[in-house]
Length: 343
View 1: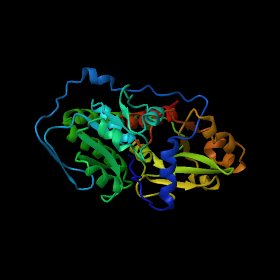
View 2: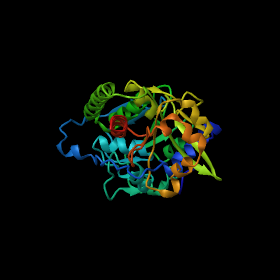
View 3: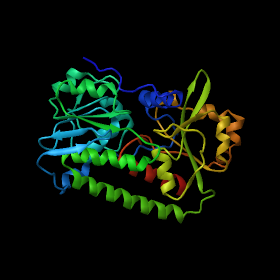
View 4: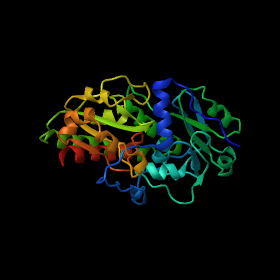
């Protein structure tokens, strides 16, 4: 049995970004981009944080009460950010959606072999989920009425719903999702340690950037795709996780155009890129040559007139950074900002 898509129609501004994220994750490529090493929860072997015991009662992202007799140990996870979060908390899921896609696009935490793959994130196979015997299913939803929630609850397994993104506070939302999964699995102490380390990394990266001799104090981050010979660019506004992290470093986000209220993504064409002024241009990388829009952009006179392009102040982030991830992905983003702006 497969579940129907949990992703509602939210309007053209959001449909295109979500479809694009679902289809291929990251999009750009540069020849010298290196793949960041996967954390692979390597520090879990030395983790000394405690796991709480006893009954769990929590309120999830949509004000639903979730009751567990004990912290969840056998979790099925149906979205990539939450897979990463579970692994960071030293909890290996018994089942995940789209394991191959996760492994391809998210290098922050390595998924161990042997985890059951239950199909796509949009239509996971329910029989496979039940066959993994989870004591909790973690899903991502956009409203409390998402059909996937009711479908799963019919089978008597507790469901924890998380909110994928919130452009009003992207870093806060990323942390909240991580902390929610920590509560459900009894790993609050571990979560505190990870988030303290993230905050320390932000402070360190901000200091490094402030001491750098930058040509501009502004940045613009983008990815994109080619459709029918036309290049579409997707800029990450202040409401995106990438955009918010850049601003935490003391930089200004030059993309101020319209963006969706969840992921903070705005779609434009090559001409629209001229609105970023003299900002540094940063973008997502991939090893997939078919997704590489940079050669096509290079043929555009308008693109070459953008100051960052003309002055060679454009850089691709390393392959394998999931721009919609958890704390570990966010640390990779910090490292990528520092490397791009100070090298």
